[in-house]
Length: 116
Image (tube, rainbow, N blue to C red; front, side, top):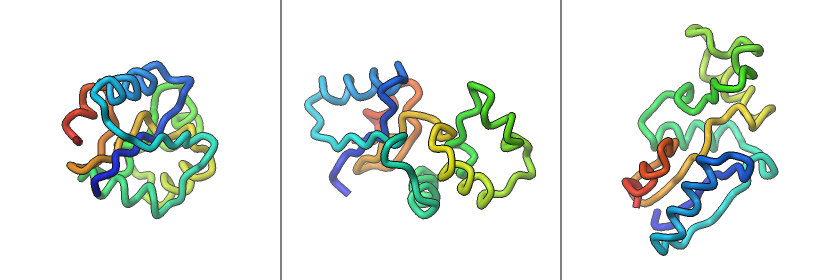
């Protein structure tokens, strides 16, 4: 993969900063506003596999929605997490960046540079 994709939430400061950083570096990228586009289970599990992390690493725990839905318990299955993230895209931590060198949740934004 040579394309760089940022799964972006324009309301998130970290996501905006990551997008700005990539643009400042001259990176050609595709911006996917995932709150509008949504996710599929296959997409989420594939991104997590490419990142080399369990899907749980993509779960946004700040804001309380994941906890309120019982998703932060250690015994919650990957299938349950994936289904919840598809239903409620806001549950996915942001921004997720996909580049030639892998995938990561880019907190801090500079983490995206490792994927180029």
